[in-house]
Length: 337
Length: 250
Ligand SMILES: Nc1ncnc2c1ncn2[C@@H]1O[C@H](COP(=O)(O)OP(=O)(O)O)[C@@H](O)[C@H]1O
Ligand SMILES: [Mg+2]
Image 1 (cartoon, protein in one colour):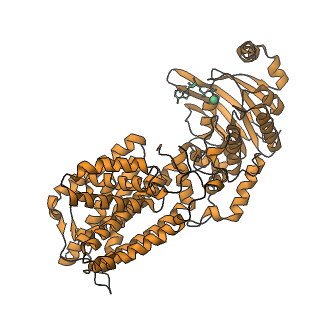
Image 2 (image 1 turned 90 degrees about the vertical axis):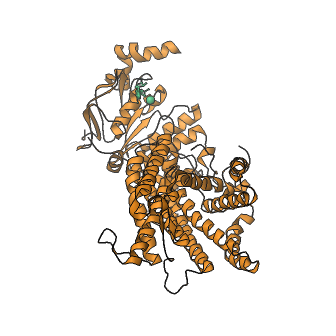
Image 3 (image 1 turned 180 degrees about the vertical axis):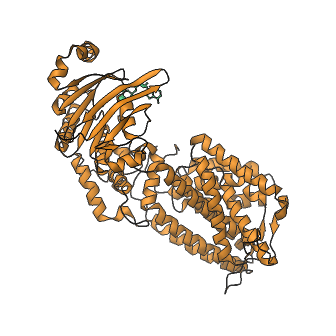
């Protein structure tokens, strides 16, 4: 990747003070959002924000591979979709009582199903990663895209689970003690999952694994020369990244009570990439900002004109040029090229 | 003399029609600095690559002590005590100098999974120790992007030392250094003598004569001479094939 990275902060380039407060202000705004929406009689705002929060998890997960590992995956929609299908299939079987494949019991519990979503997407990411990570650069982009498209067509053909039409679920998965049918409750559950995910993600970025993975992004040759098994490290990053994206897919499936092959479409992979790059690849909060910005922009433009896609493209290019290095790097970059 | 730390035995490598390593046999004693000189394109870097396990030889073997390294990955060889530096510095450009060394320490498997190694005081002290040994005093916090070329060469050395090597493969450590920097590099390498065996690939004859216990000359992938500095300087084959060419260029 030749996108310029933020150099380590030097003494003469201290970040402005607002940067330290921004995450807390953001969290506060997110907590207040559904109450404000309710007060304004704009309940739809809460469901919109829920979608943003869920996609923020997916983008943040992609960021482990893309931002930290430098792996430009154009196939993360596959993991998003597999996570969603894991939930959809288990929920269907949980409702009907017939075990999946004759021996895996279904479930309508959120915790169980999200774990299954992560497991399933982790397995798929492990398999795809084992093959795709033998390549790099443009080839890696194409191979991840190809695998995702293969899965897309597989699920289109999977008539047992709706084929093209996907799977609808009668009710949302349950989280004992909470009324998940309530959109505000669901929003806060999603927000809590995002917060936990970001916490884990931040630890990971600053762990031994994160430091070594970042090193591999900068120079694989150097890391091999100090004894790092670079292929294994990148594979692990790819799997973790896929699992997080699968978690988001599963959550989205529960939220909308619906899964379809469209979730695996290549445009979904593209949107996740845009979120990460727009928000700031390699930063903790960047993908979250990117998810909110992209979904927000899409919603605004779609409400304004039906030709919104024509405007979205140039708007994104403009934003990319204005916020080089991503929204999350505002006020953090040193001056100069 | 004790058993050699590193032995290269009858190594051969071809790139298409080009024979880059032609039946090379050489060893490096446990306390020795063995210089390998030869014109550009002679196959010196390729030889280092084969010893490290980055490039697979067509035939022959490499031993570290008694251990045959054939088929071992680079990671395994580093664990057994091999380390290298690169002719063109391969450093982690987004990291500070200290983090570059830290990576080498972490590659050895230190610290717990979720601990933040940058906040580990003992690790930082250890990393700074390697920077100091390589002559980079007080430069730990400097982003690699801001380091001068000579400092990057020294950083390469610090990183290699941090892997805990028994044998160091140095690929032209003086390349691109100014006179003062060269003198510093020679001083640093001299300070390491005895602690770690070195295969020193180098063009700078002043450095070679200052450091080497033994010199081998590689031309077109073949060792054409091997011996002390005096023997090499007196060797007519070497004079015509290499040293002569050097003088003619000047
Ligand atoms: N991967 C490669 N494929 C083909 N030829 C190569 C490759 N690497 C090096 N060579 C060639 O092998 C020869 C030896 O290269 P090298 O080992 O870098 O020489 P030196 O380090 O002695 O200058 C050169 O002619 C170089 O062009
Ligand atoms: Mg060379």
